[in-house]
Length: 114
Length: 115
Image (cartoon, rainbow over all chains, first blue to last red; front, side, top):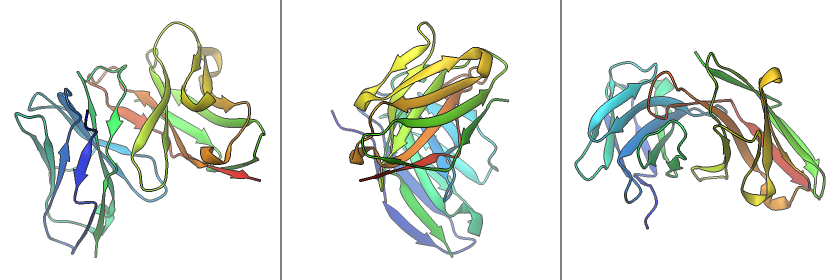
């Protein structure tokens, strides 16, 4: 059974650019969530996808968008990058998206915006 | 809205000593509560969770936590710290009203274990 994998592991962009981060969920999981973890902070919920539909969104602007594919892998897209977008972006999967469920996290993508 | 407060951003203990990491929550409905651990350059890993039933929850690596509704607390303990416990620990509450399994995390406690 493969775990959650994210790519790339590190990324450097300049302000105003666009970025796409990718996540492969754990085998058998149909729910993917994305979190942003700024330095010294806890992860903050961006949004969740369940069977290719957005199923909840946190307090992030529309320039943060996502997709989930039929194989349940997912992308996080961020447009018009700002310096404050520099953070570790974590993807997590779960089997059905229930509130009681364990989340399986990837190791994250470290995004630096210069 | 739900929230989590972790008292103490840094905790230092001696190897073999008791570990106590504090977490208080705010929730308008009975909460689901979680503790996750993050080792350097890794994602988060679930230590334990409370959903319903027994208020003392046992997790992996010898950790346990007790849900105290009257104190709105869910403190994490381990009787004897090991060097391998050095990591960052996050308490989280599940947003039941929002559906799905959106978690609200605290700001984390960095645990240092000294010889």
